[in-house]
Image (cartoon, rainbow, N blue to C red; front, top):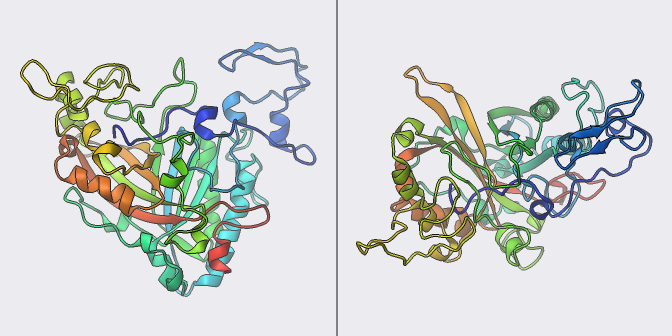
Length: 429
């Protein structure tokens, strides 16, 4: 939760593509809401209305948050390189008894059609619930993946990637099997809670008689625009969380995050895809909050206020791992989380972390069930997550204050071209 962490606040640099709303034939309900040209609206730097001269009967334009839109079709699936989203849902499904490859293909076709419509700010093709009526796309992303068990259920064992082999056991694991793994996995994120729930409900309804929910989790992040300027997000421990996350502008970003189109050990249907490791990590906040500020900073290896390394400088200053104090002790402790997770301390292993915080209420003894819905992306989970987690297992100071309670690994194929659905190369290949 320190150096290999979630992307910073959403900016064009983070997403690689600035928010845009492509033209569509006709004027839909939400396209009308986003129309600003005829209203005379002038937006200030923060997106607030400075002047408004429209007649009362004209539609009110969407704010910048509501109008922001991610693209469904592309080289990669959405929900990987985009910045953090304010609301998220993670849900895993199992195919029902008797459902196989044919039913799975029909389901992915339905899901892809729904994702394309909803991400464009459109309602469902029929029987829309109206949960998101009046809202724009709000940066909605919907991402689909396949679990290890999916391939046996569909007779596609020969197409199962070696990289999808089950994760090894870790000493910090206290896993609930009922909330782990699954045949299919869906990640939903948006900057509006109702837009995200609208998508979740539609995905569940689309499953129909082909699949049933295995587990589902809800998360959140800071809302875009809640801070005076773009900055790294904080987790529920109060730490800046995302300082050294790989960025799409890095020269080796694609190599670390995405399966190459050729020359890979993975099957061809995984070209331009990625592997998602999903972990529900409970933070033992009562224990953490008893620590002094200095003790918390020594556990992480960074200043809580600014994210700067204990060795000095600003948040983005390179950490000096050899710097010592007057007593000859390392300024950044040898078991500090930020030291252990650095790529140069793990043979170059790096992961793209894109998590959500969660809070599932208060236990009977008054302890909050809260923490991190950890989601990380990599081209090879053995060289990415497994390498780093094994290092953390051997002496991370933070491990005393967190508990891994569920886990999953999913193969997330590349994006769907126009007219195609996600996973089509696997299911129809």
